[in-house]
View 1 (cartoon, rainbow, N blue to C red):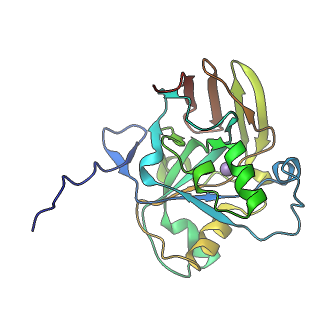
View 2 (view 1 turned 135 degrees about the vertical axis):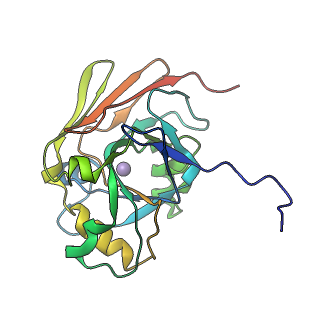
Amino acid sequence: MSYVLPPPPQASVAVFGSKDRFPVRRIFCVGRNYAAHAREMGKDPDREPPFFFMKPADAVVDSGSTLPYPPQTKELHYEMEMVVALAKGGRNIARDRALDLVFGYACGLDLTRRDLQQQAKDMGRPWDFGKGFDRSAPCAPIHRSAEVGHPQKGRIWLSVNGTVKQDGDLSELIWPIPDIISILSQSMRLEPGDLIFSGTPAGVGAVKPGDKLDGGVVGLTDITITIGHPER
Ligand code: MN
C-alpha cells in the first residue's frame, strides 16, 4: 500500500534533555480552569463543569519561534498554560490512576483570535477558527514526569516585553490535572501523543507585531515567542 499524496510530517514537540521529540496526536484544551480568568471572561467559575475544545496537532510550534501575526483578527490574545503530554491512553480512567498516563509537562501558549472567538460565542457557532488556527499552540520542551514529578502548585506567569501580565499558581486550577484526564477519558478514548492545555490564569490580553512573550511554570523550561508581521 502507498498513499496518493506524501503523508503529512508528524507534528512534534521537543523533549527536555533529549534529541528525540514527542509526537503529537491531538491537542485538547480546557476552557476557564482558573476562577479569576473565568470571572474576567464574564463567567461564574463555581457553576460550570469543565469543557473542552481542540486544536489541530500541527498547530504546535517550538519555543523560540517568531510567529507571523495571524490573519482575520485584530485581537490576538496570549493564554499562558501548563501542557500535559500523555504517554499512555485509555477510556474511563479513574482519577487516582490518571497520572499514570502522563509522559511529562511543558509550558505552552493557547493563542486565541479573541474577536473571532467572541463572534462565535455571540452567534452560537463553534470556536474552532478563534482557537485552532495555524501555529496557535506554541509549546516549550516537555519535561518528563520522571524528572519533574507532577506539578500541582507553583507560579505560572507570562510577561509581554518584560512586563508581567499573568501571574497565577497551579494550585488555583479549578479542575486539577487528574480530574481533567479522568473527565476527558469519559468522553474520548485518550491516546499516547495527546497534549492537554490545562487552562490559563487571569490577565489575558492582546499582542501586536514586535511583541515578545515570555512565560513560565516553576520547574519547567520557559516559553519564548515573538510576534511577527502578518504573512503576505
Ligand atoms: Mn486556554
